Image (cartoon, rainbow, N blue to C red):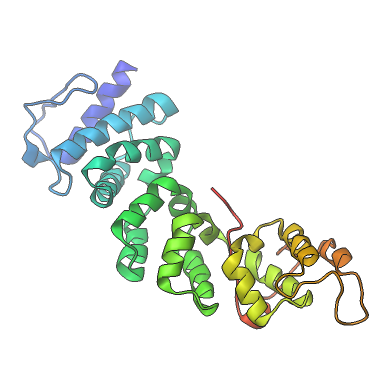
Length: 277
């Protein structure tokens, strides 16, 4: 293992130093070298952050059995992401970043600059909210994409939600729902609700008060609201008095797989907290 760590140190130093004169400064594991000039490292990565990143990388290598010699491209991305995480967290957030990266190492290789531009620059999300999102729900930033997230956010706006509502309630409490695909996960539930006579203002109220309706167990939620007589849902339909509870039990194609097209009923879209952290 000692040889692997030494090899990694050499790779990291060469990346940050640029062309050298044929000698490599070596140092013991987790110990900074005072002989290494600060100006040899990228200006965007402060010395303290570089040392923290080195220590964190050692933890990833040793604890998670990652390759001992990340490529220069990987190291560049890791450095940029680590720098961005520290910018939004501030000096007190180093331990939160460490825990988030150790629990989800792919956070270092995600395109955090794109997500930061999308949420903070474009949407206006406060930097501290983005910091919380990155550490509390890294799966959105590593497994999701901005198009899918944006489609969900646009649906909420179409249902009367303001940007601050989306920032506080969705991004703040249920960020994993932004992983939902509009056509695959949301529209089938909307069409099902409309068949249950939940539409218009009733649908808007349901989404506002209970975004979890888009959970994969949405039929269970519908049955609950039928029994309670909420959101226009009833045990008995207007036509013929048929028992709606039996309809809610019907498998309508496993959610989205059996549904084609993407028009979400009369409201034009859907969203919710179907996936929870």
